Every structure is written in C-alpha cells, then in structure tokens.
Image (cartoon, rainbow, N blue to C red; front, side):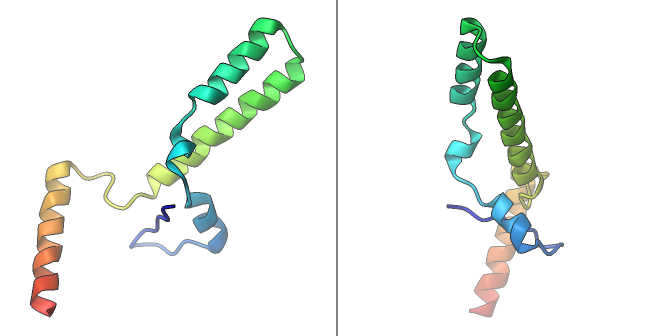
Length: 94
C-alpha cells in the first residue's frame, strides 16, 4: 500500500486516507464492462446511473492521487537530476 504526501503542504488524515491506494484502484475496465453489460441487458437505469457515478468517483480519486504525487510534474530527466542531488546530500551527511 502506498501513501502519498507533498513536501510543500500538510495533508489532513482524511485526505491522506483518500490518497492511500492500491494499484487496482487504477483499473477501470471491470467497472466499465459491468456498466456496459447492464446497458446491454436493459437492466434498472437507476443501477446503471449508480455504477456510472461510482466509476466517475474512481476517476476523481485517481486524479486526486496523481495531483498530489510529488515530482509528477517533472520530466524524467529533472527527476533524475533531483535524485542525484539528494543522493549527494545524503552522502555528505553520512
């Protein structure tokens, strides 16, 4: 299980719980397939709407997680440079 926090802001316990995730949280195919099966069979429209709302909530949760990933807005080269700098600082502290 991974927990994400930012360096520049403090995240409340409720927000941290929201940012705790499993890799399966980023798998939407089964939810989408279930919705399509319900639409195809013409089942209860209210249930379809609920399933669609749940899918949308899953998308929003994942977007929130991605928005709070430290360094996600940096290119791989920039991330590598920062990592190298931090490793140098760590080496000096040893």
